[in-house]
Amino acid sequence: MSVKIKFCGGVRTVTGSSHLIETSKSKVLIDCGLFQGKRDDYYRLNSEFTFNPAEVDALLVSHAHIDHCGNIPNFVKQGFKNKIYSTEATADLCKIMLMDSAHIQEENIKFLNKINKRRGLPSRDPLYTADDAEKSLELFEGRPYDTKFQVTEDISCTFVDAGHILGSAITVLNIKSEGEKEINLVYAVDLGRANMPLLKDPVILPKGSIDYLIIESTYGGRLHGDLEHAADDLAFYINRTVERGGKIIIPSFALGRSQEIIYYLSELMKGKKIPELPIYVDSPMAINVTGVFKKHIECFDAEARVMFYHDESPFGIKNLHFTSSVEESKKINEDKKPMIIISASGMCEAGRILHHLKNNIEDERNMILIVGYMAKNTLGRRIVERHPQVKIFGVEYNLRAEAEVINAFSAHADKEDLINYVRKSDSSLKDIYIVHGDEDQSTCLLESLIRRGYNAHLPQIDEEVELI
Image (tube, rainbow, N blue to C red):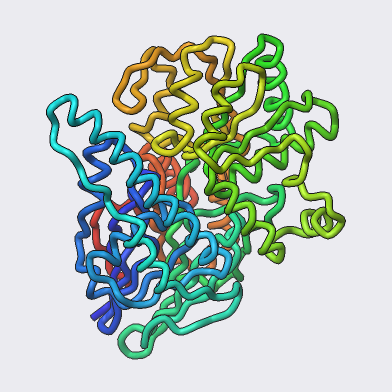
């Protein structure tokens, strides 16, 4: 039997990444992400696997974002019992991310079921519970960067730094196929950018070391703006909102983007480019994640390590407040003075950000500042597209607050970065598989690579390909 890849999720979309590698001896899953989108699709797609979890020999997790790890408790609930491998930082972060995800699902189901009861609709169960998440965490085994380890009898793995978020990894698989022929399969999903604050740049693998490449395409047809200009835009929007007495609401991923935005706000305040407003990080998960950042300084770039060693952490500015309790969160909305609120989830699909949007979206003085990618059919995307009315907890609200987007903060590689990554690895590439992008972005990257003479393929969901 040859080596096969089954593209089970995160294909022609940016959520729910999951890919099954199958040999004559092994079945290994790379990522087990949560699909985010319309509620009915969310429950259907996350509840069902197109393979038997009990038959999978190992799970490799590229990083701790929910669209890459968020369905692990359900995967374990449905029969998976073997080891889950990730970097050490990712293992620590998943302890937070998965427990928080379970808590959010349980709380949101309670709220939703109250509405369903009033409307005479059937109640729902959460996709998984905190108990399910705890059971899955027992299977994690952290591995250091740049250290090869055996996953199964015929598959070994090395994690190298992807530069996307803390602990993120390019997953390098060495697979022994029939006749002891070796295949090098590289999973570069998600891939970071060079010169981002705090983290190291993505590792470029040596030429000739990749046979097959699975690569993301979140920004496969777009170029990011300059980060310095993004910081200027951030200052401009904050100052404009403060002048009219409004609040700045920033939906943000609790992992990665929240810490990055805190860094930029800290630098802007130090440079007196914005007033010293109260900054509320209203996400228990973001608070815990920031603690993991402090623990894993070895993942930082040289400049960030110097800042921490000299006690100049951006997470220590005096007007930065981390709110953990529900009572503290409610008090934020009672305070009508200008402030900055950073809250999860990043795509506005769950968590405390929904309450802040509900309380502030109809006030034209306020600003909803989008600093990350918003997938199709999410509340965040509807805000980006400026729908006149949006639903929050099933209730329609008028979008009167100003909504602005700054894409340059993205921790994803853009079109040029992705093409350059392929170019620097191209001496041995037999095929490239493009995943993790809305279809227009994936198609754009596909066409760009084909024009440059590469063999590239855009899989369908659940498509199987055989590696020769």
